[in-house]
Structure formats: structure tokens, C-alpha cells
Amino acid sequence: QVRLVESGGGLVQAGGSLRLSCAASGRFFDKNNIEWYRQGPGKQRELVAAMFRTGTNYVDSVKGRFTISADNASNTVYLQMNNLIPDDSGAYYCHLRFTHYWGQGTQVTVSS
Image (cartoon, one colour):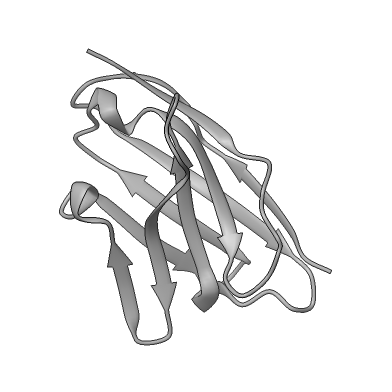
């Protein structure tokens, strides 16, 4: 059993920054298999960033602005989001790859 809890969302002006956290618990958690997804209004859920044992990967629209990282001292994975734009708005979810485990989501709203 794995539990994922996101936090850190909020309202920010364009150009601002937010750091999302995904706190995990459970014996099967592996921070190298964490992914961040987002779902904007009227849009499909899309993969934004992913952790792998060999590195990280990002969707083109966030490259150079978002950074996924993990805290080795705790089971927490972060998504640092800089230079936010209105199109970044949506609900952000962390997901454990290869499983059905999802967090409840945290809302990000970027105003223009």
C-alpha cells in the first residue's frame, strides 16, 4: 500500500514560482518512479515531469522552468515551478509509475 499526498499549490501571478511536494508513505514507494501530471480546465491529464534512476524527463512546454527532485532523507518528491504562465494552471497530481497509486491533487492557478 502506498499513500501520496500533494501540497504547495496556490494562486500566483505569471512569472512567479511555486514548489509542489509529494509526500509518500508505504513499503512499495520508490522515489525513482514518481511522476507529476497536471490537468488543466477542459484538458486531458498530461505527464509533466518524471523521475528515473538514470535522470529526469520533462514535457517540452516546461523544460527549463520546472525541476523534479527528491529528498533522500524523507519520502518526498518536489516539483519546483519557475516562470509560471497561465497555461500552467490546473490540478497537479503525483503518481507512482507502474501502479494505480495517485495523490489527491493540488491546484495551481496562474493569473496573467
